[in-house]
Image (cartoon, rainbow, N blue to C red):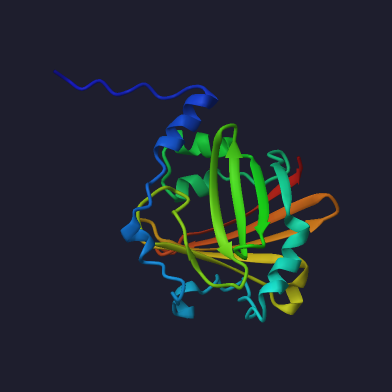
Length: 216
């Protein structure tokens, strides 16, 4: 008998459930790939030609101080934010994944002074996906945001002096199918937080866009 494909989820709850079930389980062996002393060659994380590299982080409290203005719960303004359809197409995301990702509009940024980590959480209802980063700029292992398998590391930094208004930067490098690197800037102007993103894939494709958030 022919296999009957499962019906595509139609409600927001179904889409989020599909995304939640697709989250990878980080095995102990995977975590061992990212020891605290892990380092990587700078050339592996070069920014696009039109995006300046970060200044070296002098001390942990510098990033913590800059991050103070970012702490809180933010809601994405879909109307003001750039359309991400091209991004989803470039990353070859399924329709289900793309629709579920669009529902993750709540962004929470928090600091854990005990562990010296910054947490970035995107959520919708009961579904939440978190990333934890060292405040001293060291790289840390992450799950790929497109839920594909493969190594992914990220680290916080500070923009160069001529872009100091950009606040805090975040760099991601990911390997495997459709690998690449991504640079993000987080900064606040008035009551609005901006998240600028610059993506360069290993196949040469690029995308950039800005998401706009307001305090929840």
